Length: 312
Image (tube, rainbow, N blue to C red; front, top):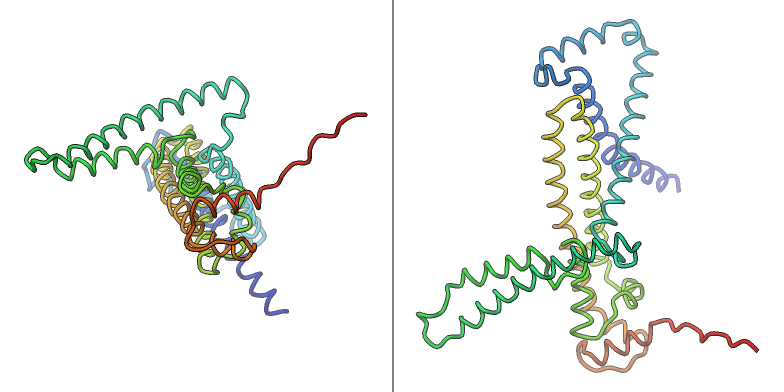
């Protein structure tokens, strides 16, 4: 038991150090540079070194007690910055997934509906272009057929908007929604109903891959929190804006990449393991996943609300 607690403590300490303290210490150093240099000498490294060296010679810093207090203050400030970035990251995840946007207050729902309709219009236009490319590729005369690069560009243009026809506010939200749409269209499966049961029978490797993809998305969203914190420093030091832009762009790329991987793994898990789930639930079926099996699974697992009570 002692070995277990030691290993757990070590893992928690490593996680705390890597996720909170180290990025937070870097942020504290940049904040110190912003406060020390300001906009008058934003890139004057020599001035920064001289001022820090002068502060380091003060009695409060050279004493042992002062050094301990400074170290504790830096660790506390770094951890606070890390917790703030993580909290912002949680909000960013909710915003990028954008589920339930149509259930928000009327004013917000109207604005978001218009944005979704605009994305749908762009996707429909790109889809028509792709369909035209496919039709022209079937022309009898090879000279009249467009180059394959045109079809690839049409697919890329449509995919940049959304994998399936948009139903949410963001590409990230539509990426996971695309899995729901495909399973419902192809096999009459309600993923929200069957997933809690399906997740329990997945292989350890696949479950670990899905968990890693979820954690990668959370870490990427936390980067947006750091970008916002760095953006605050531009009030004193304009180079912080460059850091904020770079971190925000990295966060956007990593959120999309990790969510694409997560959605692909969820779809793989559903198509591979839904027949096994039916077997465990003693639902008669033969062969691979089809509409009949998907309907049977959804109906079997869906909770039916009790009828309303009639008053005497």
